[in-house]
Image 1 (cartoon, rainbow, N blue to C red):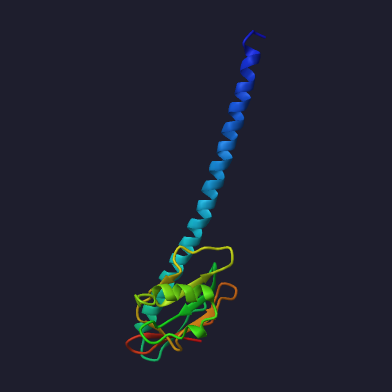
Image 2: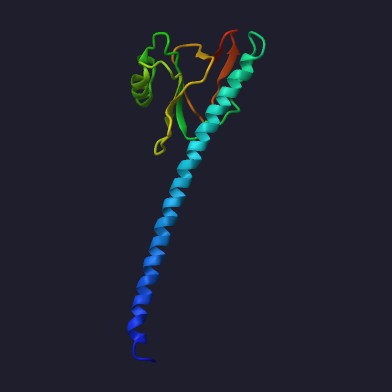
Length: 164
């Protein structure tokens, strides 16, 4: 062994440990962001499916009924369809999460579908607007069971009604 070789070895080991640590931190960060991105994509797909299903049903004959059970409601615990243009009784909403979001957006009257995520999950959008859709009873809140809902859309001419 040469003279300076022993004194250089600890620096190589320390450098290797630092690089391995940075790789683990970066990997954890990327995986966590990928999971969040996947949840956001699921929500966007759900909103797009609801929109397209409502438009399909509205284009059918008056009184036609469409089923919503094929749409996947993953990462969502409660869904509320609310007609904010008429009087909304928040006493009929069991979810405090949805009540608080409704109170935040009630003045704008721009949103008509509200979501409560599963415990431990977070949605980047807790309420959306779906055109031409109104609930049969105001509000219509349903708990999601196994990522699906037993709801129907009925064509009422000018709009589509959501009912159980």
